[in-house]
Length: 343
Image (cartoon, rainbow, N blue to C red):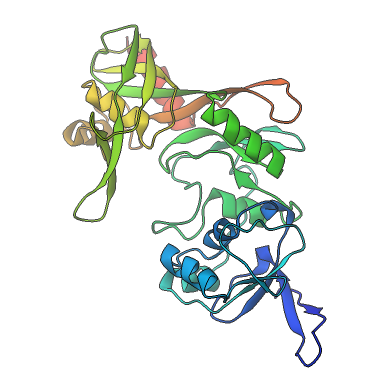
C-alpha cells in the first residue's frame, strides 16, 4: 500500500492524503498527487493523459475546464506547467481501462530479460526483445517502460525517447532525466539521431542502394485495426534508405536507415517496392510467411525479421559521440547463419 502523507488543511477543512504520482492507481476516488521529477515542466493536460490511461481525452479536458482539477488548491488550465512538489487534485474517473490498470501491477523485468547496451546518469539503451510492447495500451496492460519502472523503483524519472513496434527487436533509448529527454526529442526532429535497422525481405532486391521517398498516412480498418499506406496527396513525408547486405535468392538481407520516423515506415516502404518483410503479418505475403514458418528457408521462422541494429548520436548532455549496436536476437542470427551456409 502507498504511504499516505497528510497535507495540512486550511482552516475549517479536513486534512487530505497526498500520494506520489507513481503510486496513483485507484482513480475511482479523489486523488491528491504530488508531482515528481519525471513530470517537472510538463503541461497539465499531458500529465493527466499519461497517468489516467484509458480515460478519454475529451473527459480529461472537461474536468480541467470545469475546475475539478486543481494545482496547489488553485484552478488551472490545460497549458499550465507543473513543477516538482506541486499537489494536483484529480477528481474520480471511471473507465474499464482505468479499472484494469488499478487491478493489476506491472511485473518487474527479470534478470537477463532486457539486456542493457549502454547506461550513464542520463540514458539507458536496451536491446528490446520482439513481443514486448514499449508501453501499455491497445490490449497490453503494461509494456517495457512500466515494467522497467517497477524494476527500478529508486529511479525518479524513466521515459521512452522513441518507440519500436511490439514485434520489432533492437536498440531502444530510455531517458533518466528530463533534460536528456527534451534534447533527444529536439535532435530527432532535426535529424540528429541516426537509426539503422536490419531486415530480411521477400525476393531478390535489385539495387545495392535505394532511396524510397513515399509519403505515408494512417488509416483504420473496419475491424478497428490501424494501418499505414502510401498516400501521395495527404501523407506525411517519409524517407528510407535501403542498402543491400546480401542476396540469398528467395530472400534478401538489407540495412534500412530512417531519415524520418513514421509509423511502420520501413515495413510499408519495403512492401511498396515489391519486397515485403519476412514474417510481416500486416503488410507481408501471407502464403510466403506461412511457408517460412514451416521451414521453407531451411529453418522454421515465425517472427517478423526487423531489428533496430544501430543508433548513432551526440549525447544530449555530455555532447560526446555515442554509437551503439544491438546484437541480433538468436532466432534472427541463426537464420542468417543458415542462409549464408546454404549459398
